[in-house]
Amino acid sequence: MADTKVYLLDGGTLVIDGFHAFWNRGPAGELRFPCYSVLIEHDDGRYLFDTGYDFDHVMRVLPFEKPIQDAAQRLPAQIAKLGLKTSDINYVINSHYHFDHCGGNKHFHEACTICHAKELEQSGNCQPFEHLGYSDMTFAPELAAKRGMKLPADPALDMYTPRFETVTGDQEIAKGLWLYETPGHTAGHYSLMVELKNRRPMLFTADACYSKKSMDMMCISSFHLDPTRSLESMKRLKDLAGKHDAELFYSHDLESFRGYQTGADCYS
Ligand code: 5PN
Ligand code: ZN
Ligand code: ZN
Image (cartoon, rainbow, N blue to C red; front, side, top):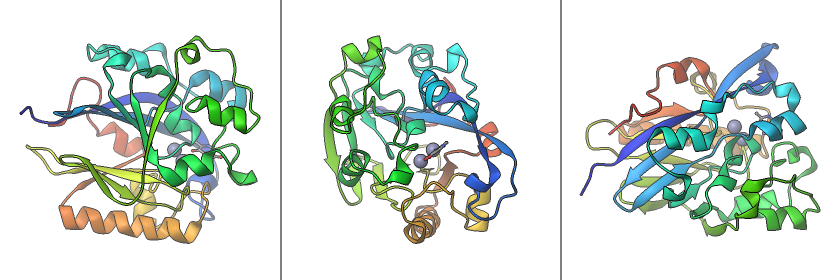
C-alpha cells in the first residue's frame, strides 16, 4: 500500500470581468485567474481531476479572455514533467464540462472518463446562455456531432474515443477519494475530497466556489444554471470542510493559488 499523492498542475491563466467572478457585486475590471488540474496517485490508479483549457480553443472562441499558457503549462508537458506519459492516466474525472475544465481531455486516450450523468446530458443539450461555457466539445466528439458542432482538425482527436462512466449522488470512487454533488453552477457539478495520510483532507471546490473571497462573501460567479442551488452548494462545501476538517482548494483564485504546492512538489 503506497500513500496517496496529490499533484497540482498549473494550466495557465484567463481573464474575466469582476462582475462575472462576483455576480452582481463586482467591482468591474479585469481579473486574471488560474486554471489547474489535480493528479491523484492512488493505489487503484492515476486519477486526473479536470484538464484545464485548450489554448487554441480559447484563442479561437474566447480571445477576450486573454489566455496566458506557456508551452510548459500545456497539460501533456505538465504530465511529462512528473516523468509520466498521458497514457499513464487511468481515469479522467471532470467536475463539469465547461471549456476551462475539460480542454485537455482529448490527450488521455487510455483513460476511463468519469462525470455526473446529468453533466454529460446537459452538455449535449444546454441552455442558450450556457453555449460559451460548453463551447469546447472535444471531450466528446460524438456529442459534438449531435449538437451539429464541427470540431477543428486536431491530431490529438484522431486517436481519441472516450469511454464514459457516469455517476450520480455522492460517491467514494476509490478509498479516500470522494465526489460530492455540488450542482447549480452546472447541472451535474462535482467537487472532490482527497484524504491523505500526513495532512488534512483536500477539498477541491471546482467551480462551485471560485475563490476564498467568493466563500467569504457567499457570492457565486455569473456563469451558472441555477443561482439558488449554487448558493446551497457553496454552503454544503463549507459544511463539508467543517465536518471533515478539510482544507478548501478553490478553482480560480490567484492569491490562494500562489500558496499552493504545484508541479513535482506534491501533497501526501
Ligand atoms: C472562464 C469562463 N468564461 C466563460 C464562461 C462561460 O460562459 O461559462 C463558464 C465560463 C468560464 O468558466
Ligand atoms: Zn465552470
Ligand atoms: Zn472554471
